Length: 84
Image (cartoon, rainbow, N blue to C red; front, side, top):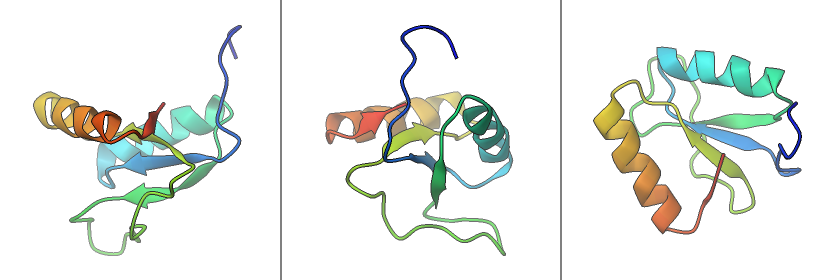
C-alpha cells in the first residue's frame, strides 16, 4: 500500500454485480480491503446482492459504463456515503 492509503476498518461494498465488479473486487482485496458484498438493483442470475449498503461501509462503484458510474458515484457521495 502506498503511504497515506487507509482502508475502512468497516469494509467495502461494491456497487455493481456484473463483470467489471469482479475486477474491482480483486484489486480492492489486493489493496487490503475486506469486501462485505455487492449491491446491484438488477444482479445477474445466481449473484446475491446485499439488500442495502451498511451505513458504516465504504463504497466503490463498479459499473462499466462511465456515465452511469459517474452518476451513481455522485448520488452516493451526495447522500453522505464514504467513497473508496
